[in-house]
Length: 281
Image (cartoon, rainbow, N blue to C red; front, side, top):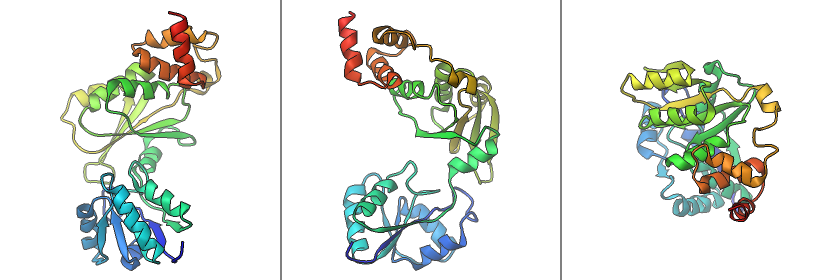
């Protein structure tokens, strides 16, 4: 880039305003502009620490137009701090697009360490933390959600999901149906006054959710497939493509969903599975 602009990836607290580094406070006070996913929420943080740096919004709905604007400012040598609603930018938010575009333009990106709900929940969950898989938010549609979960069935590392409060019981039931009655943890309202970890099997977690009004923000963690389970042959190995497809459909997936899952499990194109389904009709 022509200028010497710098894009700072600046984590902010996920709840408790004290969970911010001295370096992050300095950067937020020194940059020319703060690009915030939610300016109202970020304003509360800035007011708390008496930071007067101007802000602009950068979120999923304006990311293309505002991204072009921010790239022009960076090209002019401006220093911009990118912040999300809470936690580290680029995780389950559009921040990664701005970061990617700035890197491709030859710009300098500086990533600050700091809060993230993923790691906060993982290290306190009691589940293995030497290997983990972050899925983020699952699709809203039941069919697509089951399809994604099928792809996690043999994942050996701890599985981490984000979940909104509405529909939490249904999500847990889908996890139980597809992945079995594994051990899991619900991490709720992390770093806030009503922080809570609920540990147990999925059956127990489903019962817990059914007994109360659900509020707050949630991280769901599940144990991965056991080492032994991950080392043995998958049940579909030895089947033909058509048999594999039928096997997935017998689990309740639609033909379209089963084609996608079968293709992913066999690491082959979906059109190859579809072709076999026509031949074997």
